[in-house]
Length: 563
Image (cartoon, rainbow, N blue to C red; front, side, top):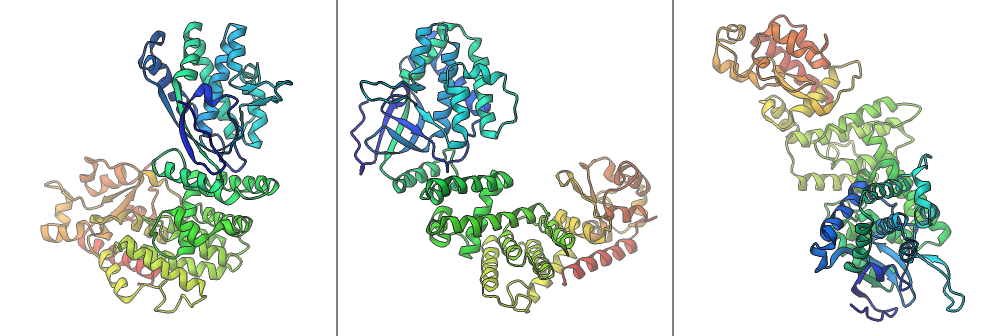
């Protein structure tokens, strides 16, 4: 298909064979603000397997008749070959690695030369063409890619490279060696046909846009359709793309350092929290739309990174990882952060980040705010306040906090109402086992009565009844609880529940009390939970014992949460 002539004001989209893509028509560059090369051997290996399968044995598969589409590439490109890649870095880089491996494995010098033309454009003194690679990666990866992938003989050196590498460079190395191992086992004729198939029968949709703004729009549409992009990638391009080269490199390093520290998933969630802090309401549009409207980072990109992204990222990590540091009060603050981590939603995170950033140097005031925030978050979790009402409440809280209102007044959005407190007590004093909050409530309670600061693996934590739900005939349980109605009243109550750090054992649940304590509640000679250790110190389990424990445990929660 012939490409239309593009002018600086034209947006165009057309199919191009890989041979045409890696030709003199394009000189691809990955701007410094793009995220690193991230395809692993899983994605790269899947691409190669798909190509081989589509090509079929002896080149007689589906590809003999039908083209193979590799997806889209979004470029900022005018009339000249220079093309800034907005989306498509992963595909273009992986295809270059694949062609480089095919070049290195080619047995004929002629084949090596012809394959090299799709990786490297030799200069010509007569035409004025200059030496250049078809694809230039981000500044921090470009030299490595040239040295070990694009240059002839580079992959042979790559096999012996043992130095520690960044994730992006390690991915390049792993993918190149994966391709090498896979293709080396194929006959030379099949490798040649694969190269021909990739270059002649594989196509990319090239979307060329004249400027950054139109590229963003295309980028966003492709992202909405589920391609391997994220809104933080788009915002990164949008925020850092207009900086000068020197500032762009500096702030790209800073951005990626923050992303690496948090991890990609947490980094994306951080932007959700920043949106909430600035918007102070449930999202009404996409995150991108609301970020542009309410955060407006493009107005001053450096200020956004320095004064918003970096401090909020620091607070995010300190809260979610419970690693706040201070000369005073750090242990207490981190204990509250641990308690916040028990909440079964993260809607509280935006105000927590705001409080920590605002009161970082006032530990006691920060502790007071976080304690009341945990109280509010736990309370609304227990009474199952719905998402819309939670977001409305936290929006009011953020507005009040920004106005420096007294958040400890009774009518503050940070404080539980009388009605909410009564509902919370009702849930806690009811059949707690039958609620969705039994594990976080019991873990919070365990922290209250524990003085060891023990940490548990929460992945395998279960709630067990001391008095079984279905005690066996002739068991001591029926001696202690002969009345079925009374037994039913206590079975699912807080006072009859303990925590186990193991999966439940259906048979052991019905053991008599002494055997259950020795073989089920204890693990390695001791119970890992203070809540469970209390039961081990009890000689019998009667209605009076359960009732007394119910009052004691409920009292502990009422004191901690000021109910």
